[in-house]
Length: 289
Image (cartoon, rainbow, N blue to C red; front, side, top):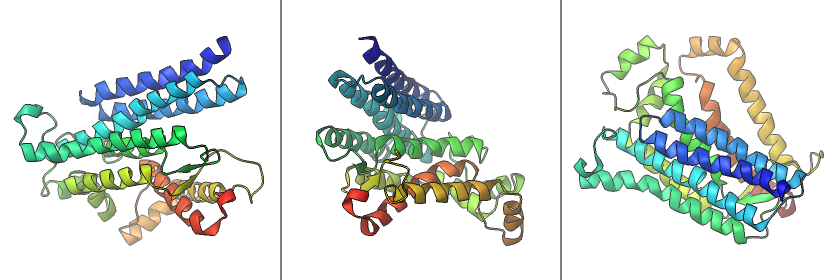
């Protein structure tokens, strides 16, 4: 009884973080909501790890885990995309009933991510094949990608992003923060509804796609058994080293366009994960994915 209580406790903490993140997102706490997702991802890892360690797997624990994931990694990122689209229209602080209907319909597209996350979790629960790999993008990874966008706008680009910034103001901010062209267009894209609509469509597709995504768990220490994972880790380590080396800043200085990764390391990591999995479709046998 006690053994099953411990992993379920961490699952409940995952759920608590998701609920808190939803509340914060409606109260100018979008960046804090990302920290809730990040902390919940740690709890989500620990509940599974402890369940295996303590041999405390149970049907109730599995169902509770799915319900918690739906709130934290499904509903919360969908609501964040709703907010991102609201911000792009300059309506984050506008009561919903005062918004134009066409804007409200577009903003509501963000909630599709929550719907497709539910479908993803339902498929996972009844699919006996997904033991060493995932079919489609797993919901915690998708949530981290979406949640990191607002975090990056505040902590990397130092913007008060709850109101859209006029195009003629961004160049002045660019000079003030020593942005290059990459930074400028990254910040500008956040205030474009099209950017978030594309993210909604891609996320929704990837969540329920038949594309096999490798698991981040080691099957063994052998390279042959974990090719996609080792490739992913090598790329991420290289990206991290390049981001920290002083020479990186000299490259930027002389080229004028080389990006500063910083916190973009998070969404870049998700993109690398997806690309590595896509390469694995044609490179590795099914039992190796």
